[in-house]
Image 1: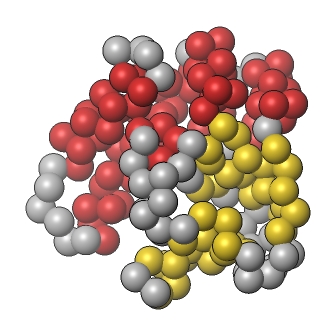
Image 2: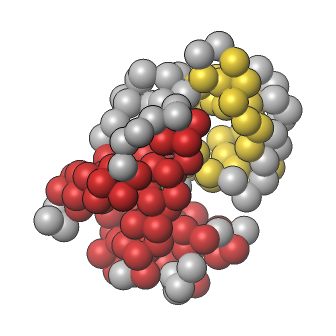
Length: 154
């Protein structure tokens, strides 16, 4: 499942095995909150099974399903969580913390390229949602620089 995600395009099977070995697997019940908006976060989550509601400003923003992930912006940049995520159904998550992710980016250079692409996509989508006039490319560059600094790559 992880190997099929765009984030891990070009990552070796050994690199993916490392993530699974050092990650934490959680089984969550319907209604259980996984992350809360405006809280700090040092990990990201991959949905192995189930549906998860993403709530922003007390409204349902989207539903994430098997193969989706969330929490990457907090993990990668140190930003507070942007939304609350709660299980809509019984589900299973793989949680990856900063130290496991650091080892991955040090051993798998393809991940850096994918992160930059994802930052660009997320910045554009967030600017569109907010009808913000901010330059998505400038936001991407800023986020990518913060990511590299956070992981000692700058």
